[in-house]
Amino acid sequence: MSHCRGREWGRAERNPYAHTGRSRIALVERSPIGFPIPVDKRRMNVIDEIPFWTDADSVHVKLFDLQHQHLFKLLHRLETEMREGRARDRLYQFLADVADYAAEHFATEEAVMRAYEYPFRELHAQEHRKLASMIARFRDQEAAGDPAASLSVLRGMREWISGHLQVTDRPCTEFLNARGFR
Image 1: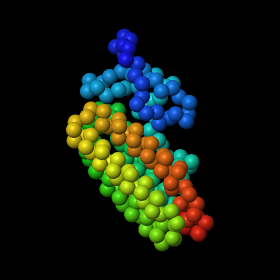
Image 2: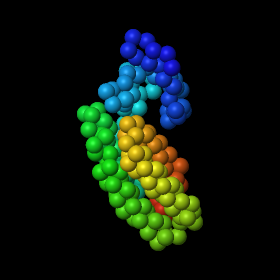
Image 3: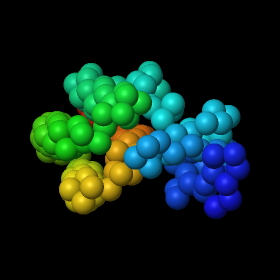
Image 4: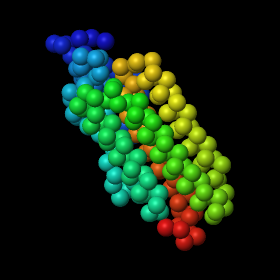
C-alpha cells in the first residue's frame, strides 16, 4: 500500500459491487481504531451504500416482505452505529438480534414452503443454514476483538441478503404466488 498525505490507497478484499462497474480501489482514511473510512464517494463506498428497502426488493409475499424489511432495519442500525463509532461495543448484541430474527424468519418461510410443497425447499433451507454459519463466524471474529468485524458483518450481511432475495426467495415466492399465497 502506498501512502499519500495521511491517506492510503487500499484494495478491497472483495467487491460486492462488481456488477456496477465501480472501481475496486478506494481512497480511505483510518479511524483511531483502524476502521477504514471511505473518502471518495465516486468509488466503492461500503458505508454510504447501506441497502434501503425499495419495491425492487419485494418478493411479493407481504409477510416475507415485512420480515425482510426488519432485517434491512437491523442492517441500517449497524451502519448508523458504525458512523457514530459505537458499532464495536454493540456488535455482539447486533449479531444476537440478527440470529434470533433470522431464525424466526427462516422458520416462517420454511413452514410456508412445507405447507405449499415447494419442490426446492431443502435447497432453500440450506441457504438459510449458510447465513447461520456466517453469523457464527462473525461472532468468532467479534469475540477475538477484530477491529474490522463490524465492516465484515455489514458487507457479508448485505451481500447475503441481496443475493438471497434475488436468487433464492424470488423463485420460491413466484411458486407461492402462482398458488395464491401473497
